[in-house]
Image (cartoon, rainbow, N blue to C red; front, top):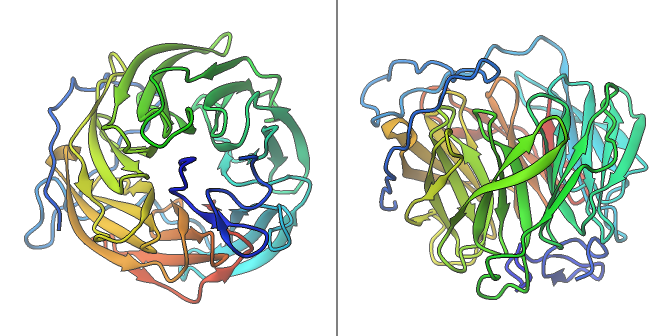
Length: 416
């Protein structure tokens, strides 16, 4: 979120301050197409995208029925909820719950305590360790042993207000983004899953901040589908930075930059499973863009802005999800309190806006699929709820199921 106030959040007195929960920090649209970059190089460590099912009746080019992965086994599945622990209305730690894969019914299961402001969560590829940022002026990342609640340890991110983290596909490196200080960090992971001392920290010192911004604001740090590059999305500089990771030393080397239009405020990037395109949510100017990606060089090419389908009112797009077979994309819209559904066409090169669906909550900050892709969870920050939707595997339509699950200041939902 921008320091100019584009993403308000709840203060201790009940009003809405510029971005974070009080005490967390100090301070139908036109279709856009981007040129096709070079095809990705095969990588045996990266799972191939699921095959496309034949369309039932007329279907958009490149966007027939979605195909989920195999359904999980019977019984309840784990669900973790990130929150802010600052303030009287905040949570007490990482929320624990379970959900029924068939119905989406969520049942509370307690809290993992001892973690401050765990606003974003991720899981290790082996499923044995949960990671959380501690979004505070002295930022940290914390590991929790699964399926229990033992906190394995915390490490400083070297920056302020970390708001995103991810695990490198090889499982040896933890990547985090410091929003307030505009930097990205790398930590090694030992055999237990616990993070070690930071091996690198890069601050985005250029280009100059965009309109209304006071400095860089790293909002996301992820690995490309080919595994060859890391991409850092910076809202403050209107830039996506591409790095190479030295997997022996855990150090970063910048290889390219992609600029959005000034004042777009890019927040979250999600790749198409084909690996040649990605979709960027621009928080400040309420747009989305299709981006081309070249696996050989790591270069991202940002396309023209498109509508989020939220009209002329104030809204702040937060995050994209893409179905496993690359047929549909969903966007969380804070302010408008909706989910936008897009058909993905031309093998990932185009987004076609289909509709928006009310989220039945206030300020959907984060969305996530269940492992089989049949459920979508939306964490609603202001209402303190998690909404659950069934995903129609034929046409991508969303159907809300049950009543929203109450969880204090729900800002991240992680179903396993």
